[in-house]
Image (cartoon, rainbow over all chains, first blue to last red; front, top):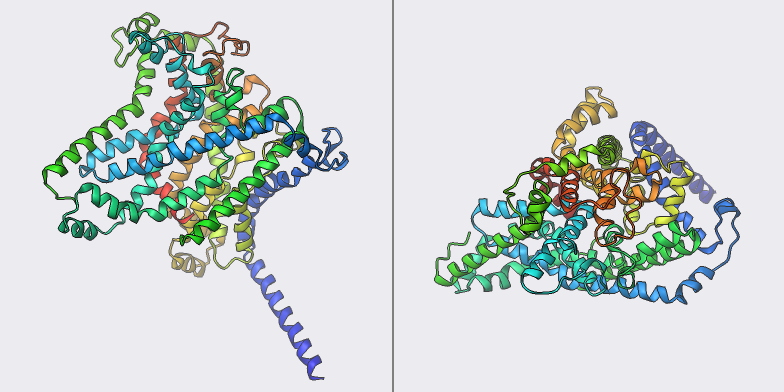
Length: 318
Length: 293
């Protein structure tokens, strides 16, 4: 008897909660209405495409649709992994990523350290204003400007080379120059903007620490090395994790704009290949399989990097 | 903060200031070169390779651009898409951000997770393209706006900003009989103009710079925004001379350097014009996002 009573009590309590929830939701209906359009946006343009990844396992035909196209299992993935192109793309992607990590990543840190040492507020502001500018320009603009400067036909750089007695270099159509050109553009566009977060972290450092270091006879370099850098260590770690998570996200636009028939061997990456194979040649299922591979690896890398950061005693990003 | 007046410290400062000044110069010299080059003649550009201040001032390049309507039309498209897109994005983002900023809302956690997850994993280019196609958006200007209407990052910045407003404001407004919509539009939004200005500018810059969505979703070249035209005129015509067939009407021959430079300037101009306003706000906005995001 007691048990039964307790049970019905529990049920009644649950009902009470449920109607409480319902009441709360009804009271907040205006709020739900505000969220609704945004929610629909995420469902339709972010989650439906995730469901659309199914076509990687199908022989998708546009006129049959996802529901009508036959399943083929891992056929596209098998084709992908046995394709020489796949390894070229993987190599290109990893190399460009490695260059990003090695040559781009430290630049904003160094630049921020330099800016942090500036005591003239006006000078600091001027330099910052200048170095932030390129971040707001599209890749089309950045690449256009470099193309005008690197062009064989009266391009500034080639004219300077000739003036100095060298041969002209066809930067835009060469394999060797693609990677340096790519990474210099990345640095030019993003290095200044990248300093913002480091500068904010540096502004929060207790001035007393520098004073104490000076008392101990530390010069400028030693102050930077023993106080400024350790103080922004966690910020550096966080940004490094974010960067590692982006291994395969080199940016479609930038590479696509630089890509041409002469440098394809070193320039083709996952995104550009998905675009040409998928949209230009109509191999929807095959290129979705490539995209799927990329997304899964990307997700795993973010999670792995985050896990590692937590192991190392940092906060991680989630 | 640093009162060190020793010799070593002075040398350090001198080197540091010089290097930073150089960095600043290197950053903007290419822009100056292109702007100056666009205002000179082809002859002067050929004689003096590095033009910073043109001695022969000429508007020929701009006259040429204006005589063809390709770029003109594309400017119109870009301006329209930027204006409408920024408004749509801000409207949707603010509404959702405000809803998600309400701590008493059931289901807030799962919805936030849903939003954040899209930053980590996505269906990719082809499935997204198929959705856009199914929605009938191909070759419509809406395809430049709707598929990217809300940026998850901007949404989180806005939500954090709304969340940091004092709770008492809303409560007292409620007691005075104000509805949730009233609270949002009459109290929360007027108090959040700094955040709204920042995010609006971020959206506006993104729309002005739209390139990828245009080449994915617009087959009809008469609808192309300015960034796509810029690529046709400058990038395809530089080095890749094989493919000048689709330069657009009025640009049948590969354009001269000065014309290319003028086109770059025109496509960049709106951003340079809003940059002073942008600059006032963005550092704060970027920090809101990156630290608390």
